[in-house]
Length: 396
Ligand code: DAH
Image (cartoon, rainbow, N blue to C red; front, side, top):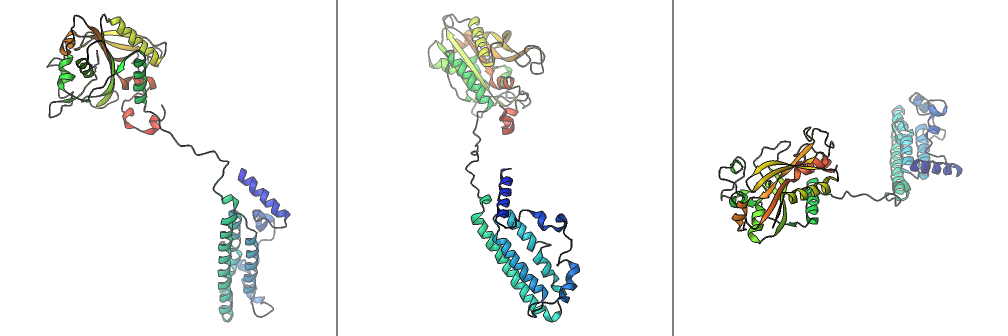
């Protein structure tokens, strides 16, 4: 809008100065102006051209008109101030139906004896008009304000800044909540010994999770950890109680990828060891975690379960925040979302790390981060979190 208003203001100023505004195309178009159609140079007029010879004898009619057209073109070009006007000129004189083009086409009707001379004039006019256009174009490039690229009034270009992956954000948020409750972050290797991943966690030799079909083993006997629980062992091996840690990290299992399984995924492990720790403490911490993460209305429930490294063991669920417990596709119409496992640390685990099970008590828990991120953002396929399609990720 701004530009067209600008252009028409320019055109009217030029009217005032007595210059015909080249922008007003209708004036030159005989069909639009109602002027008689069929100018001097229309094909019907060619015979006429050669009949009405120039009076001075030195130039025939075509040459005269070529010269006239050249003069007119030069005059018109002198008044050009915009690229649009330049284009108008080009069409008027040099376009397919342009004035000069028409004259050049009519060369065929010139009597043979006059052709060499008319041809020379035609070539000269052609060259001169071409250089006149080139000069006008160059002049325009220096002065045309509409061609200026820098508009300081335009808003600056926005650069897209990066953002955290929804998984990283869920992990960070979970870690922050536990840290506020006094847990310290501990770390362990992704490449684990079978001892730390299974044996010290009281996992019997025949336990199915040890199977090569479930766990990635290396030739040297180590494995990619299948859970973050071995970090519990490493921490307890390295320090005396009390212990209050969380261990966020990657885990690996030989699962076939589908909507809810991925060969690598993330967990947060928690471990609290002290005197007189009870299941009620565990429940309180997990309920508080759920409220902090998902809002004050979320509820949690414990269900009995079995893990080799806890006794008793439980699984815990959050009430479904997506449907508000009413039942939906995500909670499989149960109103509850399974988050992960927990329990009271098995005395056999304490024995394995050299803690006296008669003195020390503790709880442990482990939860899947993908699952929490999927619930939080109502994502129905875990693979979306790993495809790294920015169109998907940018929604969160
Ligand atoms: N490691 C378990 C798993 O991957 C989760 C788990 C259950 C961790 C009970 C614990 C726990 O610390 O006490 O399924």
